[in-house]
Length: 288
Image 1: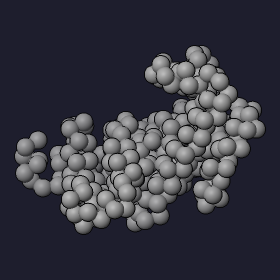
Image 2: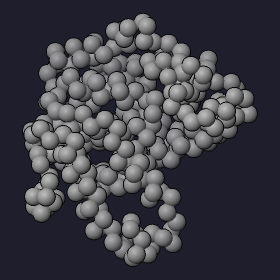
Image 3: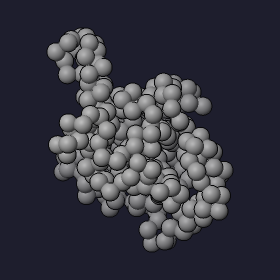
Image 4: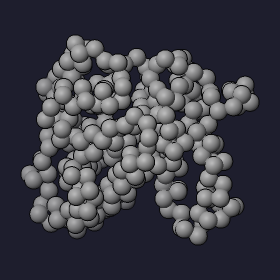
């Protein structure tokens, strides 16, 4: 580790060009996408390192007056220095987590919730490959609400106060607003990074992935210049299809819930849907 720090920005055998970032919100199909990619290319998975949240949440909350200060740790006057430091931080921690990876192998970074930091990360690693995975915000909110309800798979992870806060319809409406604003912050930053990124990239819609998984995965591999055999691609898609998920692992309150687009029409009340649409509408138009 000490030798790596003294040797410059390249740490171990992590090849920045072979890093594939998957930016999205939670409940957007990133586990499914990661699993298919893992079958298709030789490499390793960096499972939710949260590096996007680490820097992105801090940076996004900074006031404009702070960004202009030379003493602010992520200030504009010192941007070149801290961008280089962020690059080194990512490469070093990626290598520490995956010490056996080789330069020829890929590192798939699954970052649900990390899109808020995508502009900083892609600026610091411009040669890396980027996937912006987008799901309808109404389906996103419906999926999270199902997961955090009593007996839902995320319920035990909530603190006691949060559990009490989701016991009435008023509380659920408030939480729907929180989730919608979170979606906008995440995906807006992800789109900003996508638009400015000069390297290999693809904006992938969950609806397309569900409707035509094989064709969409074929398009993704071409956009990212991933050398994939057609037979392997077909096998990976079939292996990780919804139909191959055991029935006991699927359903309401479980991690594998519906795997469908437009399910929010059955799950959200009209008022819940209106809240989500009011907050995310402009972004939805931009992404359509």
